[in-house]
Image (cartoon, rainbow, N blue to C red; front, side, top):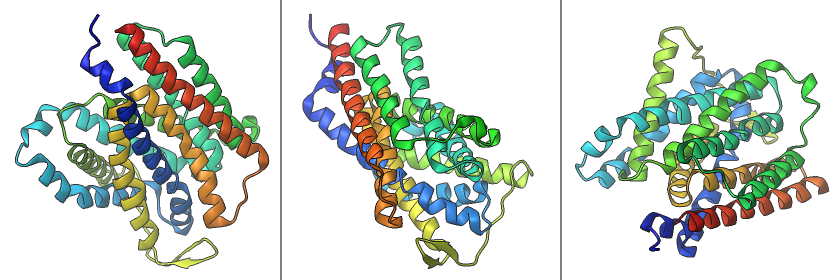
Length: 317
């Protein structure tokens, strides 16, 4: 039986390497968001205000390359306005506002652990959509990856954690699932154009909600304390907008489109490994040996998910 082109695209070693490199780059850039957002929140910025500026600036930065990529083919966005809207509402606005609210009440590690349970939602979506259960190799890789995630983060006893933080992190998990699904299943639109439009929608939604009094939009224009010194308020925002939003979203979109939503979502778990690495480099927080072991377990699980997913596609063909 001939193998469909879509399957060949996903199992090609070159395609897998290309998608994996972009997905890992995206995870590394997203991992900086907590370290740069927390000082802004501590200085008086509300989560909605920080996210609105972050998404709006990211959409603006990507605007020129988006126009160049579309080359007048505006109908491409018009034909796919539903996934663009979903991307802006959930992958842009919800996931960021929810995550920033979560880290106001619980530590970053616990928030990330709950948020990344969104990968389970991605798997369930694929299962319901195709009516095919993932193979045992894929399921085993998922279990190993989630175990490694828990070991790296080593969350405190969840019984003592503020339930408001857990609720916000749960909303972030749903938004993250939509992010991977819409990124992987929206062909035909240049990634930079789709992301720019989606983040623009997210920024408009948050600002509108703020003007209606649904979410507080408050900003502080003084210096912020971060990394052992003080910085002007705009510097963390610039990093959040350009590195942890514009570049991170575009590379993540390309990676998800290449790898598929399931594999891309589990590669995204490496964000926690990168977060530990950034804490080491920026804050001087040395990772514990158990975290290094957990990171290795997580990477083994991610490799198992990718190998198992490729095997599932070949069997299905």
